[in-house]
Image 1 (cartoon, rainbow, N blue to C red):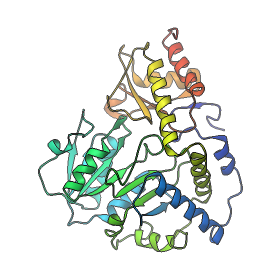
Image 2 (cartoon, rainbow, N blue to C red; image 1 turned 135 degrees about the horizontal axis):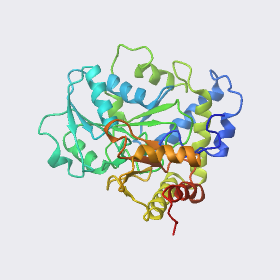
Image 3 (cartoon, helix red, strand yellow; image 1 turned 45 degrees about the vertical axis):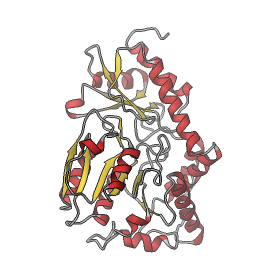
Length: 359
């Protein structure tokens, strides 16, 4: 199998546990029955608990990538009468801008750099907005925003707060109630450590009130909500990934809950960053999440050359950047079934690549 014996440190897909892999290896069952409805209900309940969603919240399950979750939220909740403040701190923030453009939703392209938006009150344009949209972890550069500060700003200004938590769920705190979040978008292949193909949208009651009739068959939230009442989706769901999600949520609970998973990811991130202090690499941003470390070479080496060198010489896969950042940064994931021993493989490979001895 392609890359089967490689060590994977990419921010999606991420390393999966043997327990979850075993679920995926079984025959996919029929799903239009009460047994599968119970799986859907269990997944919805587990996700609502994980993000501390308000009472009355609902989850929509899409057989699609995370971008479909982003686009479908804009399609179903915003109109030409809205005015969205879209945080644009990298490629995924730019994607939300593009989505608003495509669907003719009025918006401000709020370009930010070198801030986690704890000071959003001072930085935000002084206009009247109806919604605030952010990729809480801007994965393209490994930058984490202050959800509490942004939520306070959204509440003060009566904004619908839409949060893409795709690459921070399970590794970094997401609390819909304490951060006044109305929508959380999540995806299977990041912190949940499942295969790609399933996206989940958690809608708080305030967001549910905004769901409108849309010119879309597949992404019509009203249809998903109606079917969700019976534990089903309008169209074929990612059945096996749903079964893996149920198992993964149970696994997280068994291991001590989401807070313990966050603590585990934080430990791995801090361990990795401490152990590579002797290398000519520096952290790209001071606002990194537990989910990932973004590094830039300080010795003139190309980041892409490092990525290729690790893959070709050590069977270790980290994540490159494209465009203007191709030679500047590369990204290392701490999501998934990570341990210190597994992380040591990457650390040792980096030291060997540089011809240096690890302390």
